[in-house]
Length: 135
Length: 114
Length: 140
Image (cartoon, rainbow over all chains, first blue to last red; front, side, top):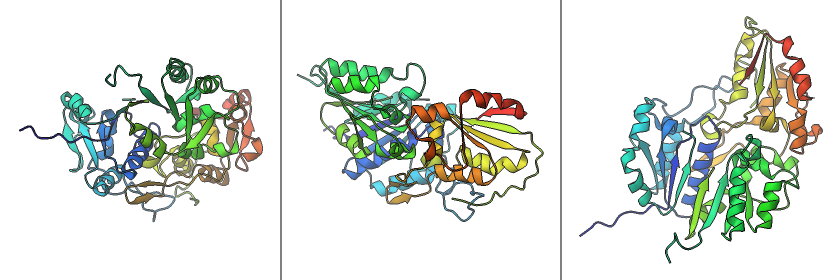
């Protein structure tokens, strides 16, 4: 008997780089809005979007010299927190080819590694897909 | 009739807009063409795309509105860019990401991000 | 956030005009570490650093009351997003001249009186004519 496949409500193919524009902020805000209405979201990180989840970040950003006591979560901490808070409704996939191409292969353990050869299958597992270009 | 043969509706998310350089407005002209062809079109302006909503007589916005498209402006992006201190087109409405999430959850809505 | 620069002004570097025409480069990931922070953090190494805001970046210098530097992600209220207007105020307070492109201000429908106090609203041609006052011009 075939196993029933899980369907995600939204897949975001995020290929634009962090620190290039507010595209990551928009993607995370949209993800949260979908989660807030009870939906599920998967992010497929391509290109430099794979920098978001490198395990070399640690939990916090570098110190703010103008506010040394401030607490500033790192990008990977933000993603990990969303995964943990999502209770299985928020997932993050690292494209293995893009990760290798960028030398960004050390992802936090909550991230799934997936070959680009599985992109179409991943899209098939989502009711809605948005491609956020810019890699 | 499957979803491909039925006239799909579009949620078109514009993150660049007409301040991003020549041809940056092409996406909004795509949206207008789809709306004029009878598709349900909603446009969500986000990030620098919200700057397109500034002013009362932006040709792309006017054409979209005339074609019956709904034009939304992201609240967060607008606040980042101090747009409360200027005048937005009467054809636009400020909305949050919840509007995008709701639209993308509808059957037959295709999302396109620029 | 406001505070004095941690970098002692040594003035070894040349006078530089920094032109900023891309304002928003990652609110969630950058937080305090945005382009204006870089200028505030490093300007002590230079004899002089001034800033010109052009295009969409002029909005950084427009005073308003709506923006909250905060976004909710999961159970976290990430309230450390960039404080754009505050950073421009800090630039002015720390002696930068902050030029704001008049054409962009006008095109976006902002009244010049809404600009952060102490900034200088300037026609684009006037800004170019000030380039010779600097050893270097950087588009940041």
